[in-house]
Image 1: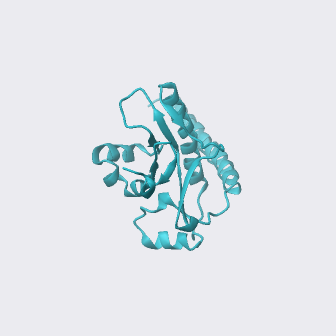
Image 2: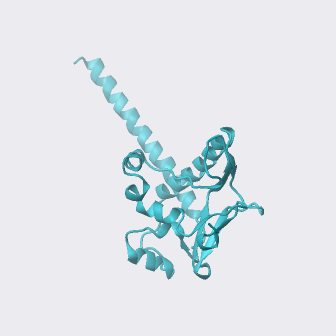
Image 3: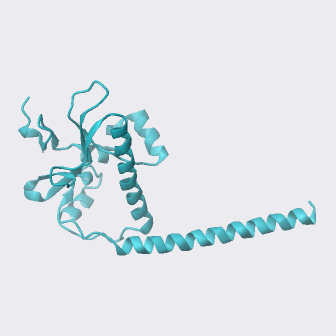
Length: 189
């Protein structure tokens, strides 16, 4: 190997190291900012937690016990990306000809409540009509996941690939003929 080639490799490695240091620093400031802007703790059990394999986790959450380990900035970034992608996918669906409603009449996200408000959940939207033959209205739930989880979902279907998602999607509610999110017991056959 020539001296020039060795020097060039060394400079490239040094440049890459400086870029990694810069990325780490930038992400550190982003994470710090995200963690300062956290939401107040929920006073209810979120429907997405119902399928959690750990009954103790569900119980502790239900009684309001704070986690020993707080969320990390990286976790906050992942959730924020999911919210942004939800809006992107909603626009794709609308542009493709689906009649998607993502807010109720008051402009808030569709929500539901059980057990005197101790269990609550949100629905990403309701598809009222579209270019495919389907029984409308349809509850729309947008989930993002890493590639390996998506492959498992396609291979094994949702119930097996991610029981927690399954339990949180539509455990107690559906859409009635008027396009309202209602408890399943209120839907007439």
